[in-house]
Image (cartoon, rainbow, N blue to C red; front, side, top):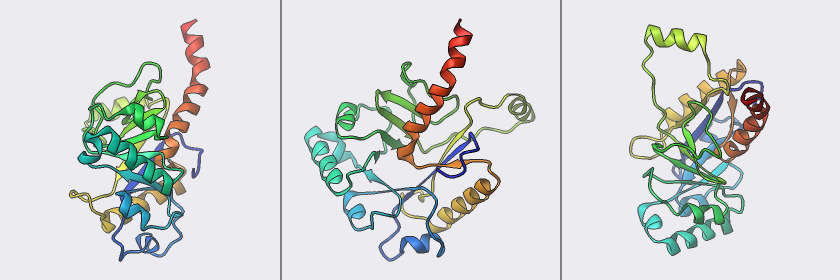
Length: 228
């Protein structure tokens, strides 16, 4: 993590760049120090170096429709990437064999949006675009809702900020799902600026469950006192 003094979090996700664009080029020649969560199919992931950041396996509808096929795909991916904890799917709100994901070591699903409430056993911090679909597995939305900033809303935000901070999940891919260098560069430059101001903390997708657990454990004594 970077600059943990802020309670606000940013996660940058990006499709893997084409093979003719090295990762160092994506960072405009800088050392890639930001925790980027890169996603792609297994064939694409296996062609990249393993030290570029968090690797996330992109699954298509064919992978998801047959449980045995999904299990074999996950096991092949874990063979190449033993630390794999994140998968990327497109369709939210369906039964995506959650038990199987947990059994194969997956703790985060990145999807377009979440439309079902989190499990009451593991509540989601207010306003965060994620939910706990079952114990040990979180679903994270890359479609962050954009609030309409009216004068009344700005006044309300000024009076009451989320106690647990905010979470922004930025997907820098283009509309067709390909790598967008301009969008990626703009997002990383903006994030570096926020970090320099100590206004946010940058984390990767696989770190999110641990962050939520730590925040929940810190807030639990206050909740117990209020309940008493």
